Length: 239
Ligand code: ADP
Ligand code: ADP
Image (cartoon, rainbow, N blue to C red; front, side):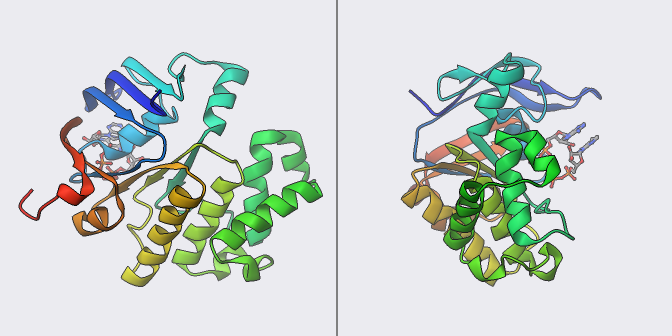
């Protein structure tokens, strides 16, 4: 069964703008999907719909066979745990250490009370350390998040999402504010996670070049509709 399945999904914002227009999409486990489109095409709306950061207006979205569209309470939390999300703006707590930023990501999903009290088990710490090791930042455990470069902060946010052990990672313009060198590091991390941990990755990008380099599957979106969907190695420059 598909790991992500959207059936006839429409999202209309309160002001009447249609973010997604009757969109159908099926993603298999292990794919590295890159979504490309102009600003305003509906890329963010698509990712935000998949982990239900907002409700959709019509249609249904299934994560690994379970509908997230109408899920509530514990079952919604359960489905959401499978879907990690990374943003352009990193969303770290600037004054907190790298380690603690990563720990709160894990514990928020398992035990909110523990997280708010700052209590972490050795198991939590081990998982956080492993995740930071995977993105090559194990030497920065005790640095404050805002002491790190933009690229490093984005890799911390990747580590944070890894500790949640998701099946899917959604990344909304994760490299939009980064320079070419750190862009490569962040995209390499995502590729490694996709290949080594078998996590399904779905990334919004502006750059067709990057899409060709990293994706297994390329989706073009315009006016809330999929206008192109093909293996990434079939993308030519005139498309
Ligand atoms: P991007 O094009 O990089 O996705 P936008 O500038 O479109 O970013 O959106 C930035 C933020 O503003 C997002 O949180 C989005 O949901 C919100 N937003 C975008 N367009 C509108 C709009 N017409 N009315 C209200 N909020 C909007
Ligand atoms: P992209 O991520 O491709 O730049 P978005 O998904 O952010 O595109 O936006 C798709 C459309 O929905 C745009 O017309 C945008 O202005 C609109 N939009 C996005 N967020 C909001 C919002 N919170 N309120 C109203 N309109 C929005």
